[in-house]
Image 1 (cartoon, rainbow, N blue to C red):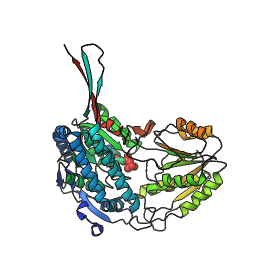
Image 2: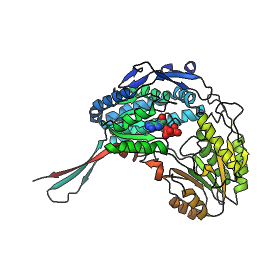
Image 3: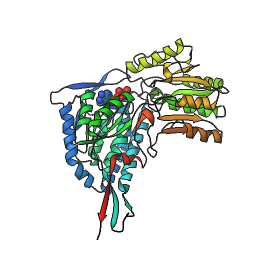
Image 4: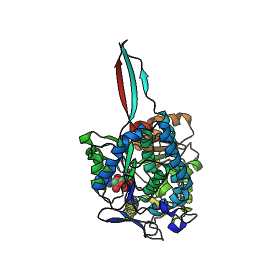
Amino acid sequence: LKSLMNDPSLLSTKAFVAGEWVDAKNGETFPVTNPARGDVLVNLPDLDVADATRAIDAAYAVQKDWAAHTGKERAAILRKWYDLIVENKDDLGMILTAEMGKPITEAVGEILYSASFIEWFGEEAKRIYGETIPGHQRDKRITVLKEPVGVVASITPWNFPSAMIARKVAPALAAGCTFVARPAKETPLSALALAALAERAGVPKGVFSVVTSSKARPIGKEFCENPKVRKLTFTGSTEVGRILMAQCAPQIMKLSLELGGNAPFIVFDDADVDAAVQGALISKFRNNGQTCVCSNRIYVQEGVYEEFSKKLAAEVNKMVVGDGLIEGVTTGPLIDMGGLEKVEEHIEDATSKGARIIAGGKRHALGSTFFEPTVLADVTSQMLVTNEETFGPLAPLFKFKTEEEVLAAANDTIYGLASYFYSNDLNRVVRMQEGLEYGIVGVNTGLISTEVAPFGGVKQSGLGREGSHHGIEDFVEMKYICTNIT
Ligand code: ADP
């Protein structure tokens, strides 16, 4: 990998704690492997709780000074960081593909998406406005300040190794918070590369640390229990989100949670079917189905069901599976065997209950964790895939008759992150927008992610929003000041 890179120093072999590039005290390491080839890319320091504490102490020690920078000063540093990420996008993309598996074009896309949060929130750093409120008595003056929350800790998953951290650290730093990240053990290299560029951009020592560790639970506990940490921001499963929420309860820690989804994708008879097929491809198969906004249940109205299934299967058969570093590959490997087995389990369960495979359906000839992009027809609500996120390249098609029926089915889940529908009937569009119990609704589009909009879920999909001008609010506290004048 290093031989392909312009700047091989971006592929780190050390962790970044309190502004220093460090090894574990006892020399312990854990391997980061390339899921497409199975080879070990790097052995990284397997840090322990004491290192996490050190990172938190450093973040705590420098937070007031970081917050004392003007918004414009913080913005200038974030802008520099943004420029460096864009300059190095090809190297960063290669690191991302190597550790995570997604095709290089998607990886570079993720890097630019990450950069966009740093640019956006850098700009917002100048505009964290307070408020003056007309007093309730003649001698009272009321002002509201927005102050940084303090030290923020983050726990992130492997599916977007760069973007999930960028959209947390950017608003945090913009607001004047300091930040300690624990990236997923599968994909810590992109986080370290971001930290290397942050250092070059002039982010002061201790403001941003990356704690690499295979020990998720004890590090997570420290993040929740250390009184110097004032906020935890997490992206991952609802199960782990619940555990972290409970762990944060004793110190009433502020929390942002981006958890699981079970996105419905609905195609009505009055939709543009070709556009819906393209939307389904993007929303289902991007990142090989491994995103929390991937459509998980595709509902197609009976009048266009045959046409849609045929066209979708034909497109899916054109997808090219392989090592994401090879040009022309559209679909990489799954992250690990567990991920692959879940896809198989969902297919076996559905076919045993009457579903038909109309594209793919089995492990790919390339072996390891490569799987054929799959479409299942005649799926019903009795099948596992209705209630569980597959997190893989499986598109299950449900047939429906009426709008009322499909809206009820779409909302019949504990999750409420993303939803999508295709229709060209204006009245139906408005009814559906209002009826879907989701934090995000894509109307005639399968792609909804952007730094300028508030991303987040309702119900058991989480708390808080990331991105947009609202995103900064999760990292500030309001201070109400009542002044009595004589
Ligand atoms: P995913 O299936 O996407 O990996 P998880 O919720 O299992 O979702 O994991 C998301 C992140 O949370 C990963 O970095 C993982 O290591 C971490 N994690 C898992 N369990 C815990 C825990 N009990 N405490 C802290 N972090 C955890």
